[in-house]
Image (cartoon, rainbow, N blue to C red):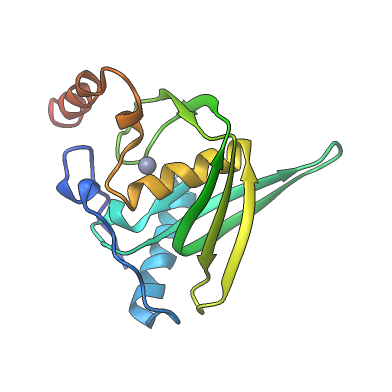
Length: 170
Ligand SMILES: [Zn+2]
């Protein structure tokens, strides 16, 4: 399945996603597989269904668990109907977005979050995430609410204007 990726001017980036019925129907699972493929191809840390014009509450993220001696990558974690139930502290860091190619911005995020979600089969999970993982999840969670990372940046309108010119001016 070939999915069209929304760019910064697409209205679907502003849509509020709706809950997904689980276990997920096979056509939606196919969509998720295509999202994973796109993520891998673009070396992205995460993608949300809304970025492909699919208005459901689901995203895929790559998470990292690091200890002093090793770094484990949890690839393609699918979070269905996620809810951030607690946020604590704050951190600053650089973010980019597949829908805003070539733009990075310094964005404030919570340092620690608590999240509930389902897997595609409908099993419920609850987890705590900090640092990088919290940032990645919050970025994708925002996409499900029609929020993009530049909304957290002052002077956002100039940034998006530049994105539109970059995408359409060549
Ligand atoms: Zn994004």
